[in-house]
Every structure is written in C-alpha cells, then in structure tokens.
Image (cartoon, rainbow, N blue to C red):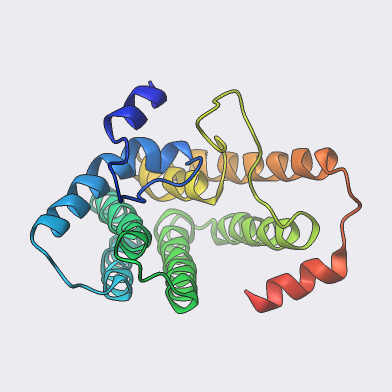
Amino acid sequence: MLNRIRNIYTERPNEHFLKEKDNWAPLVFGHPFSIPLLRLMQKLHLKTHPNVITLASFLPILAAAYFFFCDKLLIGAFCYLGYFIVDGLDGKWARLTGRTSELGEKLDYYLGALGNLAMYIGLWYSQYYLAGDWLTGAGIIAAHYIIVVAMGIFIRQPHYKTIFPKVRSYYSPQEEGFGTFFVAPLFNVVTILFPLLVLFQFISFVILLVRQKERPDVRKGIKGLLKT
C-alpha cells in the first residue's frame, strides 16, 4: 500500500519533493495533500518564501495547543493535521525553488519544538491536571524529553530500518508526534496511547543503542545537542 501511495506522487522532472526514504506518517497523511498544493503553487507562479510557510505553520500548531488546553480534542486534532500538512510544504518548496538555507532549517526545528511543547502542556492540563493526575502526566512528558536528549547524546540518529524498503522507519519523532497529537485526541484515548508511545520511544532507543557498532561518543553527542 505504501509503495502504491508513493508511486501516485512520483516526482516529475525538476521536482525534489520526496526524500530518499520517508517515514510512513508523511507518506500516508502528508504527501497526498502537500504535493498537490505545491504543484498548484507552481502553476500560480507564487513567489512565497519558504520561511513564510514555516512561520504560517506555527498558527495551526498554536491553535491545536489552545484547543487541547480547552479539552476540545477533536478540533485540536484537526488543527494539528493542518499543521502537519503545512509543515511538509516549506522544505519541499525550498528544494523546488532552490531556496534551502540553514536559517530555514533552524526556524522549522525551533518552531516545531516550541509548538510541540505547547501542545504537550495543553494535553497535560486538560487530560491530567483537571483529572487530578497532574504528576503522572508531567512524568510521562518528562520521560519523553529525557529519551529525546538521550537519543541525541548516545545515538544522534533517531531512526532505524524496518521491513518496508521504501520507508525509513515506522517510528520516528514524526510518527510519535502524529500519534500523540492527532490519533490519540481524535479517538479520545490520550491517557492510554500517550504512555504507550513514550514506552515505544524508549524501546526504539534501546534497539538503536544495542545495534550501534561504535561506542557512543558522549562528548560529541552533547556538543551536537548544544549546536542544534
């Protein structure tokens, strides 16, 4: 199925939409929307700078955080889906128009990280704090970020190969984010799925750590995190 979806959106001459191997979440839920939008932007001869698209993607992610905070999970989930689609536009548009830059990459990273934190706080407040279980929610979020830091220090590569030859991994920050901020709120199972996703994140970290052939260089890992 994934291969069929990918073949539908095969790149045309002078297009650089797809990375060598994409994760399943953007492949299934992102590209079917973002690629037609990019081709429409081309036909309209838009001169929009990729960084403007990156900044625009921050609006739906803030909206998602707000609706999560207000316990309107369904609306928040679709706001996140809007962000997920728009977030897939900027990099592709930059490659397509030849305007890739280090500033654009950093802007995309930091806005996404800030938006994710806002959404975590929104879900924590409505699903844990109001239920009188604020410590459990805080502990799960803290565990998530601890594992993120550990991956950066000890592994510096949060993906691993799977049985799908065209897909980089079935678990990555993109998959975790999609599960946490779209799937879980959509089906109103945040308190069930959220800890499971963090557990899976930890398992993937252990797998990556065990599979590493070289001994982790902690100093380089810390320096890499500080440069991010």
